[in-house]
Amino acid sequence: MTPRERFTATLNFIKPDDRLPMIEWAAWWDKTTERWFNEGLHTTDRDAIVKYFGLDDLLTIMIPVKDWDNIPAPAYHGAPVIRNEAEYDAIRPYLFTDKNIEDAIEYSRKIKAGHDRGDYSIRIWLDGNFWFPRSLFGIEEHFYAFYDYPELMHRMNNDLAEHNLRGLEAIFSVLKPDMAGFAEDMSYNHGSMLSYDMYKEFIMPYYNKIIPYIKSHGVKVFIDSDGKVDELIPWLLEAGAEGLYPLERQAGVDIAALREKYPDFLMLGGYDKMVMSKDESAMKAEFERLLPVMKKGGYVPSVDHQTPPGVSLENYRIYLKLFEEYCYRAAE
Image 1 (cartoon, one colour):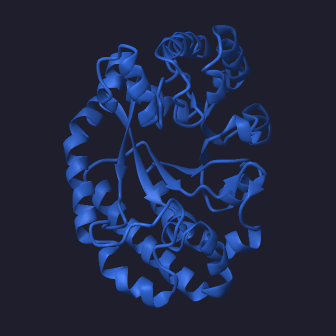
Image 2: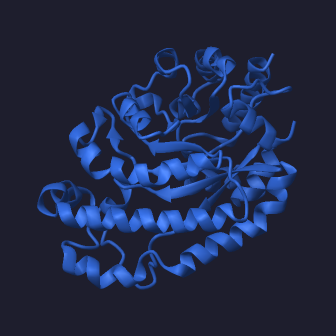
């Protein structure tokens, strides 16, 4: 089977003829690839590394929202870019631009032929309605904005939804991706960062504008949220989402329990990155934990976020050897 055929079969609960897809949806931290380069890897380029290790590729088409050349960057990670509606108005001309969509169309055309051949799968990346306001208000101020600027929050998310729809319409006229993912990060290691009532008021109406359109084209809809996501899943299902990633083990996510509770829910990720710096037996035990779920379909195993720099090149090779073995075992 081609890499794309493996990926789409798995997302449709069809057992691939040979093995499950072997992807790294988030690839590697730059510090990780720098370490590997110093340990003998010939490159730090993401695409070259995918080919070198023989992984199935999952390319990402982004629909950018911000023109950072004309918007002041935050002073530090999580710092605010805006503080009120007047400041949003000031940067609004540099958000949701036609050029951002044109760039996405150009990239889509560039990768269409390989996708049609099945050389790789494609994911569309969308800024989500929790993620986007936070990227402008900053982490702390975003929480206050739900109460201090509710009308502005709705305006921002409506602007985002219209931009995402324009981008999706343009890209779908070129190709049909295999999945779409909303970047959100609505949870942390103890659960959701907002209540169901807040989700239903500020997030779900905009999912309702976009998710049905994506699904009408036969594209699987995922939400990207780190942290402990158990509480979120019923909320996401209510909005029509079909899957979730990256399913972080360190946040207490148990994919076996999720599969039992939600037999048709799609999952991507789930492999505990914290065992990858340990020995082979620890890495193998983690695959043993995942294997029953891998066999049931609807689950694309992958590291539960980017491979950290504590993982040596030698250990990553061991991980890949086991990854291949268990992807074949899951398809037996």
